[in-house]
Length: 101
Image 1: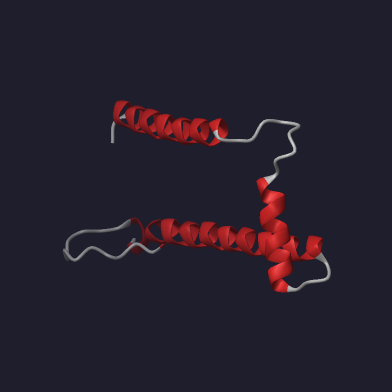
Image 2: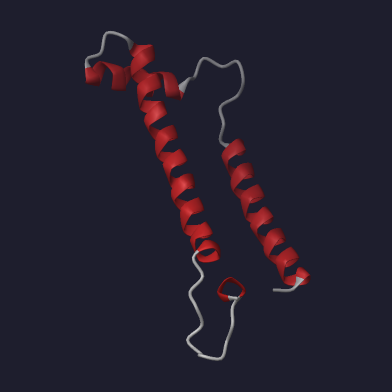
């Protein structure tokens, strides 16, 4: 892949990330208002779980998503690193590889 193609691919991806970030920030509630949609959802969920400690319940739920994200990063790293460390020998009998010398 050429440097120009990588640059174009990066710019397209950066533009997409910037568009999603802008769309997410536009819909945030104003700072300092009494409208806290997360508070309402957290209290409803805590009452639905019938927990006595709301803070620990929310922390436990958020940590579950965090751990899932970390596992996906690790999984992607293992998949991405596999081709470089597990080279297969060439099928041609005359071909030599650096590890077979």
